[in-house]
Structure formats: structure tokens, C-alpha cells
Length: 145
Image 1 (spheres, helix red, strand yellow):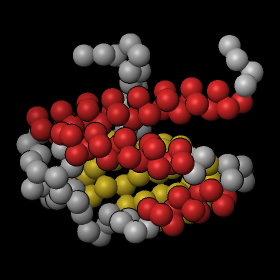
Image 2 (image 1 turned 120 degrees about the horizontal axis):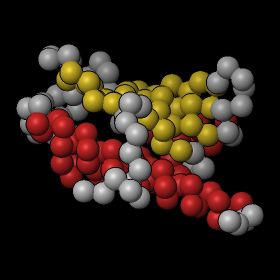
Image 3 (image 1 turned 60 degrees about the horizontal axis):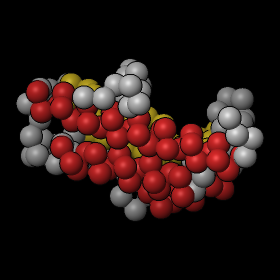
């Protein structure tokens, strides 16, 4: 185990990135099984976090080009959250490689601002079906295939 703070962050980020990509693959598969097509319009909600307000705000500013963003502080005042959504509009084509590429981008853009891509969900508002990462327990190191 290393005491190097940068290496600890790098390792943590890499684990989170692998987990988010594995979640996208699993959820993408479930969505296909449940009849989602490239034309299905879905609501997309997501959350990033960080401990430095200015980092979280800069991330939120960048993402606000494509999403409605909101920045909040945790009850204990130690963590900042950048919450994003496509509501009231939606997004289509979020299956297969596009979903995986989106999750990868979100991980990488969060990391570039010293933040972490925490959770996300897609909602088929017509059929009232939701696919969310907060109920998944995936370890891409052991849950392969």
C-alpha cells in the first residue's frame, strides 16, 4: 500500500471508472432486454461530487452546455455535489456503445476537475421504468462476463 496521495487518487479514480463502465454495460444490456431502442427517449439524471467548491462549480459549468445543472453542498458541509439532468427533455440513443462512451466521458471529465462521477439513472418516462446505478453492486475486478 502506498502513502503517495496522488497514487491513491489515481488508483481510486481508475476503480471508479471501471465500475461506472461495467454499470453502463450491465444497464445497457438490461435496457435492451426490456425493449429500449435507439429511438426511445429517456430522462437522464446524474451526480458528481468533490470536496472543493470551485472544482465542482467548474465541472458543473462545463456540463451545463448539455445538461441542466445544480450545485449543492452536503448537510455536513464537507462535500459538494453537481447534479445534472436532461429533464424536462430527454435523450435518445443511450444504448450499447453510446451509453458506455457517455459513462466513460463522465468519469474522465469529473476526474479532470478533481471530482468523482458518483451515480446516474435513465428513466423511460412513458413506461415508468428506471435503470439506476445506486442499487448495483458491481466489482469489475471480479464480476467479469
